[in-house]
Image 1 (cartoon, helix red, strand yellow):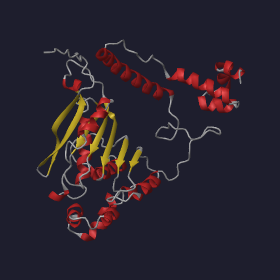
Image 2 (cartoon, rainbow, N blue to C red):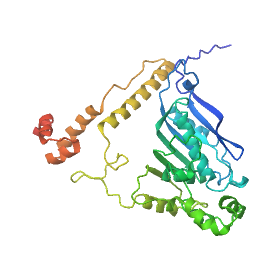
Image 3 (cartoon, rainbow, N blue to C red):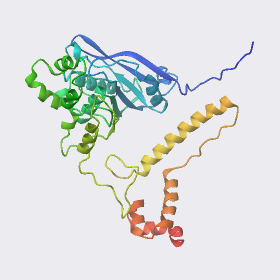
Image 4 (cartoon, one colour):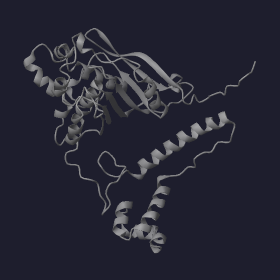
Length: 357
């Protein structure tokens, strides 16, 4: 009989905990539930410190019926391993007599519940994103477009915000009326419409319009960033709806430019380049995550760990400016790119690079 040694994992690195059947509210005598995926350390707050993490609220597609738990657990676990908390949310079933806006009210209530319990679940309440698929993406889009709208706010946790910092939509119905026409021959389509929009057919156009993210964009209003995914072979939701939504959300965006330079890849929510402080935080997160994993991999493989060295955005900044000065003769452009208030700073700090041009 062979004896195999199993290495101890004192930091619980890579371990994910599933907290099931968390009741976040009750509506019409029905318990509303969600599930939370957290690092395993969250289970032992006396022994481990779990720093607050960004939250992803996930809404599974269900044709506005009751979303099922567990559909995307393998995928969602990967986000926890990469530094997030994930909550997958159920909402009321329209077929059980809960028409719009029941599902939207419920998802927003879940977000407020999670913010109210941020410390318990190791959530950073300032960094909350929502991700949905199909009808769940419709809910996600509406959440992003109606942040803290009192029309969809229940009394539960009304001291908390239901606004989000980002929205990820996978094949969402952006125009609900067109989507139902597109699937007119699908069995159960008519029953779903009566359950979702109510018994008075005269009100259906108004309700469908309110449910359609494409018609909820208000000119001049600030919205969180949206990332839209859709397949052009979709047989349920027309692909062009995503394209129209993208145009509606970004009608007059002009490319950010500095001098003659355009096409910057990494931009913030305002379409400007990221600050060095943001880059520094990102670098520290990447290096610490890698080095932590490298420690356990080296232990497992019986070798010395090969860690990433500590470096800062400022070091990368110097490297970038050196390369920029090697290829750009206009000091004003260099000054603007580097963000120097005074041209003397550009000339003094990077004088050696400028001499070699």
